[in-house]
Length: 414
Image (cartoon, rainbow, N blue to C red; front, side, top):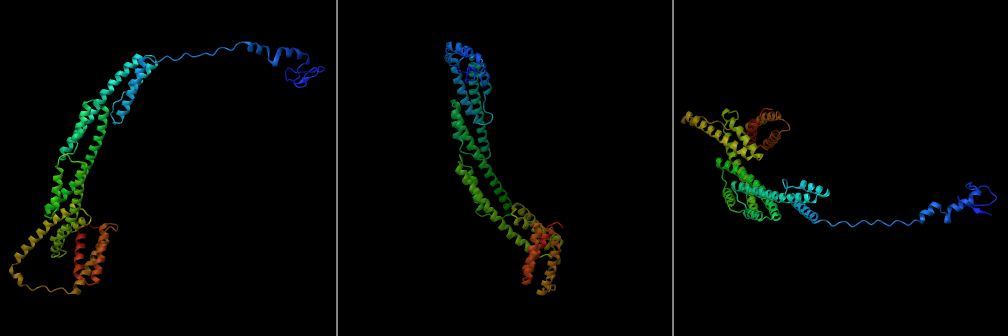
């Protein structure tokens, strides 16, 4: 009778000694099936299956937090909110982070009462530090306001500082911090705008002083400057008022930069006429020629202060030349009037003289550094003289060569 192998469950006939698949002995098949039991389970598995399953372990519900733990959590949240706030006030703000860490470690180790004491001390410390910090910042703002007043201007900051002091006195740190940030931003803007306006005023005063020393006419500009000073003396200046004054100052400075060059150019033309009365190799007029060239160069480059200094020195030299000329005329006496007049120069002679003068100056220009501004200006004037001579405009060519000679006399030898 055939049966199945208890190992591989393959049918094996009774006449066979071993299973043809796994080699299990056929004589042991009946004992093996008995050992496996129903459904092919072993005896140990059947014994284990007969035992009842253990009941699941149910963890006890967590104990509710104690009142002290709840108070610790509440104080910690309050401290964290206040720290987040004061950190927004900038560098040097209060900090109790180390105390909060100490309290957290104590609470984790079960010392809740100790943690509560640490948090309460941190709360009091943070409140005190915040008040002192805000008081220092308010004091700093008051000092900055006093410094602005000392510089000669009063801005509209009194009401803001009064509100800050009231908020600090009443203990409202959040409100105080907000007012503090707004007032600091406002006073910083005032300080920046005032520094810019002071720079404009210094330039205006410098140019006005130079013009006054030279006796240059300023016309309505002097009234504009006085009006700006008067407006700055008004109390409680606002941002709009300061902006308006700054615009007026910028316009006045622009008018000065237009008026002073015009006056200097007219004066330099007069001095040029006076210098041209002397020969180009006249030793006493060499300094005047150099100063005239310097003043013209400074004026061309927009350096008004340097130009006025050169004009002031030029006036002194012109005065010396005039005095020397008058002394020579007195020494010659009235008999000089009867002297034979110098024959007038013909056009051909003038052209020949100017051509020689232009060649001499062109040689001087070639000794200058080729990339210098002086060399470029001189080359332009040499070309201008050449065109004037070609058109036989002798007088204009003579004036241009005289200007070029004075300009080169003021420059160092190349």
